[in-house]
Length: 288
Image 1 (cartoon, one colour):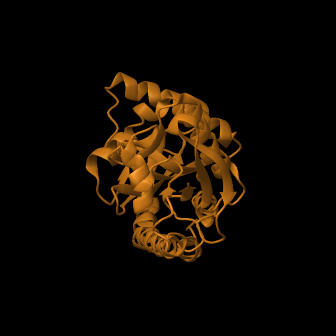
Image 2: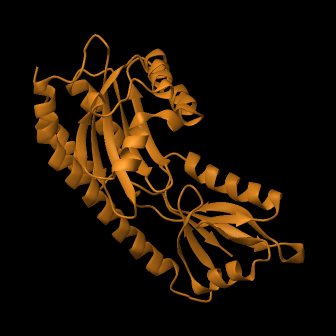
C-alpha cells in the first residue's frame, strides 16, 4: 500500500511553525509505511551530541528506550557516526554504511533488536545551520528486510519537502527568538543570557559578559554556563531541567543572584513568554 505522501508533506510544513508536531509527524510516518518505529533527531555533529529526539516504536516503552539509548548505546550507534562523520544531506540504508565486521556495531544491533524489535533502517539526514543536522530514521524488522525499492522511491519523493520544512522551521524559530531577545535585552545594563536546554549560551548582553569575564564563580566553559561551586552548578542544572520538564516548554527566565564572596548561582526559573519552540533549540533566559 502506498503511503499518503501529501498528508506527510502537509504535516511537515505545519511542524515548521509548530515544533510539537514533529512527534505527530514521526508517528504518522510509521503508520503510513507500516513501520515498527522511527526516531526523529537533531544532532550537534561537532559535539557528537543528540540535542533532541522523538522516539516512536509501536507497543514499546519509548521512555525506557530513550533513557537506555542515551545512557550508553548511542556511543556505538553507527548512524550517529555516519551523521557526525559525513555531514551532508542524504538518504541512506543500513546496508550502505553498517559494518557487521565491527564487534561494537554488532553489539549495538543486538541491543537494538532486543529493545526495539528492529534490524534495518532507511534514514533521511538534513544539514542545518550552526553545525546541526536533523533527520528521521525509519526502522524495519528482520522479517520486513531492507527497505524495498517502492519504499525508497516514496522516501525520495518525501525528502525535498522534509528538508525544506526543517530549514523553514529553523529560520522561523531563529526569527522568533531574535525578536523576543531584542525586546528582552533592550536595556544593555541588565545582565541577561539566552541558553539552550544544555546550558549552552546562545546570546548574552554586555553586562552578562562582564560577569563571565570576572571569573569569580559564574562563567562559561566551552560555550556552556558553569559555576565553580558544586552547589551552584547543581542549581543551574536543576533550574534548566525544571524548565525542560514543563508541558509545552517555552523560553524561560533563569534568575541568577550573587551569593556571599561573589559566587554565582541560579535562584529560580520563571516562564518567559508564550510562542513557538525552536525545532532545534529550546531557549531559556538567565537574568541577574
